[in-house]
Amino acid sequence: MGKRGPIPKKPFLKVMSGNLPMTQNNVGTQQRYATPPSRPRHLSREEKAIWKKTIELLNSVRVLQIIDGPVLAAFCCSYARWVAAEREIQIVQKENKLGALILKVNNSYTVNPLITVSRRAQADMVTYAAQLGMTPAARSRLESDGSSTVKRKVNAFEKLKKIKDERMDTKNTKIRKGRNIKKE
Image (cartoon, rainbow, N blue to C red; front, side):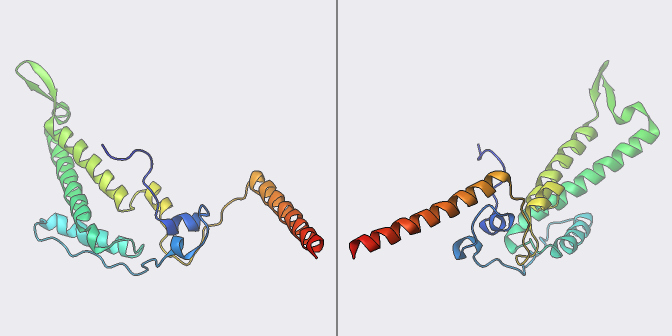
């Protein structure tokens, strides 16, 4: 079983959202120009078209790297499978309105296997899309350009803590100055 909770953010994204201080270790060297992966040879014609379109869309965000190739290929296969299943469901629905959803087998009714294939392919596609930053939630966690910063609201507790820290700093400097005077 994998780790629980939200998908962890990279340190530079935490810095941009204001959750980490801006240090060299946290910021690092963010790769601004990502190299897209090369297309696998096993993709069908439809999957290749999906690959090309997805690469074009994700290049503007600059999040793809060579290592993302298998996830992108799985996304393309799931997307093509989902579209094919939906097309078949529409064909069956034109012929027989009820047959698109349920089938009668041996005097009992069962769910059309095309519905199951469509659901699984759709779920897989959404999972892979989230991994590639193609869902609204995933995009909100990504920042396409490392130079821009996200403004963060400062709440009342942070203001109070800042005031307290400033007072403590001035108090500590007075104490240090007093110690230095006594020593002389």
